[in-house]
Length: 124
Length: 143
Image 1: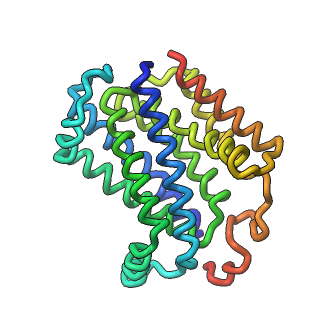
Image 2: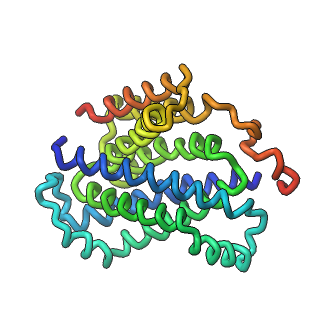
C-alpha cells in the first residue's frame, strides 16, 4: 500500500466525519419524518436546502465521495470500504481531545477492535 | 417495523452502490492497480459511465433512507446497524468483483463491525434511548 492510498483514505475519513456531524445537526432541526408521502418528502427537501449545516455537510460528503471513487480506480473495494472505518476511531479521539468527553472502557474497547480490524485488512 | 425496512434498504443500496462504483472506476482506469496510473481526467470520464450513475443513484437512496431514519431514531442506534454493511460490502466485492478476500481480511471486517457496535452502543446513555432506537417522546407516531 502506497502513500497516495493512505493519504486518500485520510481525506475520505476526515471529510466523511465532518459531513455526518453537520448533517445530523441539520436534520435534527427538521423534526421527525412520519409521512413518506412524496409531497411531504418534497417539502422536507425544500426546507432542508435552506439549512446551512445540511448544505455544508453535503459539501463535505461530496469531497469524500470523489476521493472514494478515485481510490476505487486502483484499489480493491474489499480493502477500501473497511479501511474507511477509521472514521469511528477519529470521532472518538476527536471527542476526547477536542470536546473533552469522557470515554468509557467499552468505547475504548470498540475503538481498539476497529483498529485491530483495520490492521488485519491491511495485511496482504 | 418502519425502522427495520428503512435500514435494510439503506444497507443493500449502499453495498450494491459501492459495487457499481467500483466496477465503473475499474473500467475507467483500465483495471490498473497502481495509483500512479490514476489521473483527475478519469473522474470526468467516470461521469459518463452508467455504472457510476447507478452507484450514485443507489447512494442517494441510501443517503435519503439514512437521513430520514435520523429524524426519529438515535444516531447511536442507526450507526451500529448500518455497520453491518461492512460485511455485505466485502461479501459483494468477493461475489461480483471477483476480489479474493483472505481469511485475515474477513476477520478484520468482522472485528470492525464488532468495534463499531461497541463504540456507538456504549457511553453516555441517551435520555430517551430504548431497544428500538426510538425517541420516547416521538413513539406515539410509530406504527
